[in-house]
Each structure stands twice: as structure tokens, then as C-alpha cells.
Image (cartoon, rainbow, N blue to C red; front, side, top):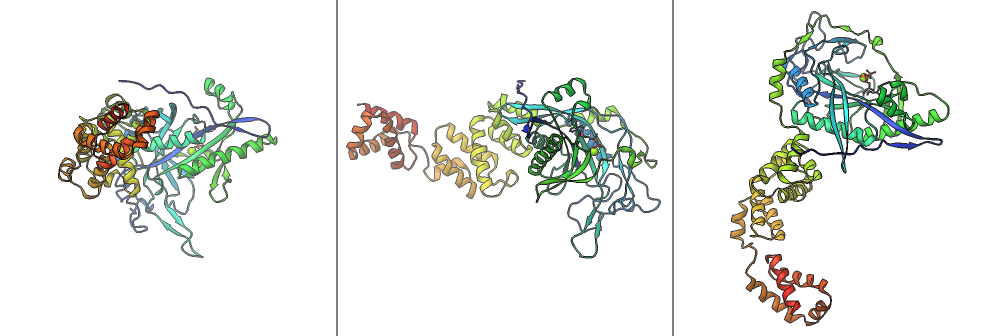
Length: 503
Ligand code: ADP
Ligand code: MG
């Protein structure tokens, strides 16, 4: 198996009034587990349901109700951990994190502070142009989501929707290994991609199925390397946490804005307070939400309603055996098996459906041609139509058929585009369409020669010019193509034009 070598991206540097500063970023990503039922109840997790229609008694914290763990959610967390090359902890446990929210009926959130189900892992974050960084994962723990308070439906009242209460979330915590806004977005994108491959989170950020808390600090050049050597956080600046970001664009904006705020404070001789902040999209600024709370503020303690969670290595192995091929491996395979560029392989492995489509087109045909057609023609056409691969009107076998016709020189590249448009809009077997509509390439040099002779006879002045300036030969090629309705074999035309003008 071939391996790719990458260069490390440079950290983002922001120049303050006095010094240069580097960024240090760590992310806590909340990913909603794909599961039909909640973590501790059988209530449905369906998005967009009638408010308060998916609420079991235990979700609404009725007296005497007890949580029952959903094995499938555990399996999904394990699967995610395996996909992030992480340590799976056979023994984990649930804790209560106590706090009041109107949309948290229990008055606590069941989470895993002390013994998370997944330990250390790693994610390769690629930035294109041969740049990539391995970002370390510190842990993944499972927890319940809270409900939703609604303040904009009535001037005098607030409403609460408990449908989301108890839905299973995974909190994926990175080490502070991320060094710039683009890297942060790429990290979230890579997690999303991996989880979508695994089927453990649908990664729909608009629906709030993936949200990130972004921790940002600044340091002088050289400090981060000291942290790396010692893993001692005192070499780094004080971090602020920006809560609940659910857009890649805003994550990047917020990081930059927050870093500049910290730089201004420190350069003015002040100190950054460790706190939780919110990003105001309209104003383009972060603002304080609360000072940073510590674990003891929440009076964490082991949840007495739930036994410690013990899973067996055998079960973990079984899950591992069913993991699909993941993006990094698939990309490498596409590069080595189909001769694709790094860039094309990345585009084609962005999601499982595109990758499967490409493979079906490329199998037994020219990989490069297939990549070209899928990326440039098909994706372009789908985008113009506001469609994606899931509702693509051209089955892979048909696009494959077009590629075969090109490879066999039966049709020219230009005609292939017309053919593609017919197949896209009307459907049908490409070979049959070519046959029925007389789209075959003219390789018969006699016919091409006749057309060329006519053009030469009609344009003596052009011929004289072209004899002095061979670059003008292209004009004759174009004329022949026009005269033959684009069906002349370009190779044959080029040869004939060169030959005739050389005479
Ligand atoms: P908390 O519960 O206080 O948010 P966590 O351990 O869950 O703490 O998460 C801390 C997050 O902050 C991690 O993603 C970590 O990488 C990040 N982090 C820690 N120190 C720094 C720092 N100096 N600068 C930026 N991020 C940091
Ligand atoms: Mg946190």
C-alpha cells in the first residue's frame, strides 16, 4: 500500500501592535449519535417532530422513572472510537452533572466525566497542497442532550420542547493541536466525514447534529514547541471557550476575532480571563457568557441509577470487523489503483456515495477519465441542477458506457459532452444513442480530407499565413470540426492539417 507524505502546516500568525502571536486551538465537538431511540429511553429521536411528542416519562424526569441504557448507542460510540483509531475503554461509567436549565427536567445531565468510553485517538487533518497534521483526540464521552427553550413565539411567555431531552451525544475532545482557523474547520470536516462513513452521526450542522465548542489561546512563537516537549500547559496562554458553534464559516471567524481580542488585552498589559464566550454573528465579536466553571461547580458524582458500563473485548472486535473502509484508506487506494491525483482522490472520497459511484464508473475502465468525468461533468451538472449524487439521474453504468465510447475513439470529447447531456436529461443507453443519432466519430480520413480540401480551396489567404506561422493550423482544425458537426476524430484532423499545410 502506498503512503502519502505530508508537510506540517504553519501555525496561523497574527501580528499585534507589538509582537507576532500564534494561535492554539482545541475543539470539543458534540455529535448526535445516529440512533432511532434515545440514550436511556425508547422515545424516538426523529428531527422536526411535533414539540413534546417524543418524550418518555424518564426523559421528563417523572418520579420513580429509571434510565435503561440503549445498547445501540454504546455500539455507535465504540464504532466512532475505532474509526478515530482510539483506545476503547472496556470499563466506563456515567456521572451526573448537576445544573439548572428550564429545558433540563432532571436538573442534571448524565455524562461521563471520570471514565469515558473512548480514550486517546488521532485524526489526520488534510489542508490540501500536501499539508496535513495529525490532531490528537483526548477522549470521547457519551452524554444526554438537553431540550430546547423557545423565546420567540410569544412576547410574554417562553415555551419548552423536550423532544431532544435524552438524545445521545458523543463529545469528542481534541488536544490543543490545531493551529489556525482553517485547520479547525478542516478538523470538524474530517470528523464529520469519518462519522458519516461510519454511520454514527449524520453530521447535519444546520439541524444541530454537530456543534463545536472552540477553545482558543494565543502564545508567542516558540512557546507551543515547549508545550509539545513537556505537555505542560503553563507554556500556553489562557484559553477562552466559544460555545455552540454550528457552522464552519463562523468557527473560523470566531477564532480569528477571539484571538485578536486576546492579543489586544495582553499587549495592553492585561490578562485573559478563562471564560466561556458566545460568538455574535451579527456584530462579529465574542462576548462573555460566564466565567469558566470547574468540574466541582457541577457537583459531579457517579449516577446511582446506572451500573458502571462494562463491555467485552470480543464485542469490540466484532464491531471492528464490520467497520467500512474509511476515508484515508479509500483515498490511498483510489490513488494507487486508479492512478488519481491526491486532489481528485480527496474530492471523490468526500462521501461514501460519491466514492461508490466513482468506483462503479472506473472499474475496468480508465480511472483518470472516469475521475475527470465524475468530478468535472457530472458533479458540475448536478450542482447546476441543485442535485447531488443521491438523486443523480445517470446511473454509473451509463456514464461508464460514455467513457468506453471515448476510450474506443468511437466518439470525440466534444460529442461525448453532447451525449452526456442527452443521457442526463433523457436517459438511455449511450452506445445505442450514438448509433441511432449518428454521433460516431468520423475516422474515415477520406471524408475528413474532402472537408479539409474544400476549406483549403476556399481560404487561400489563410493557407499562406499558416505556412509561415504553424500556430494558425488550429484554425483549420476548428473549421474541419465545424464542417463535420464535431464528429471528426481530432487526432486524424490534426495529422491531416499538418500534412496538407506542410506540402
Ligand atoms: P472543559 O470541560 O473545561 O471544557 P475539556 O477537557 O473538556 O475541559 O476541554 C478542554 C479543551 O480545551 C480541549 O479541547 C483542549 O484541547 C482545549 N485546550 C486546553 N488548553 C488549551 C489552550 N491553552 N489553548 C487552546 N485550547 C486549549
Ligand atoms: Mg468542555
